[in-house]
Length: 269
Ligand SMILES: [Fe+2]
Ligand SMILES: [Fe+2]
Image (cartoon, rainbow, N blue to C red; front, top):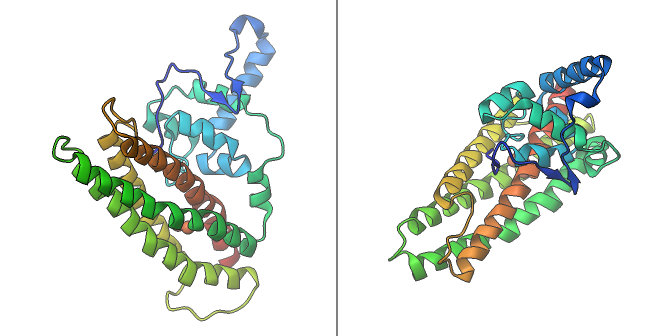
């Protein structure tokens, strides 16, 4: 999925921890070697795995425009190349994130049935609450401003497409895939119509990618959800809601693609 980009030379702040680049003069030869080895270690790891270990790394990747959801299977080195970001800057920001206990650790430890319950009660519930609001705001923008601003009609169309993709997606997960994963986690044999669990997982991952493409379109149409100076309150609220909606979707899809689905596939082996 897409993520909001920042200029490459910007210094990200992670949970209030400012990124302070180290000066080479502060490093002895030995520490240069160890730092280089540590950097290689970061760059070889998969983005999704890094986030699965500590969700605060997701904020670092978002700030640099690195896709940690659908693109979570790529090594960090490749992800930096795709995002045209200097890997050293990303590694420095990752090093600045303190690795202490986190919500992500807790979620990663949950049995799969409880993780599913969390995803449904937190993220699916959120989509069901906020999606109708996004449609309402965007349609109001069409009625009030589309005569003068050509970008509003396609914007509202892509918002509707996003919602129309997501609603059946939630339903398929809740009615088909998640019950099958619950069964696997409880070592129950459940008759399914889809064969191996990898089949619906592949289908859901493909739908996540489609949602990511729609969000990319919305980024392009809205200058990364930046309201123009002449925007009315509804317009501003709509873009702010959409940015929040995207952030929640990033976390939601990350939990599915990088934690739930790999663990389910592991159980099915
Ligand atoms: Fe979901
Ligand atoms: Fe999903």
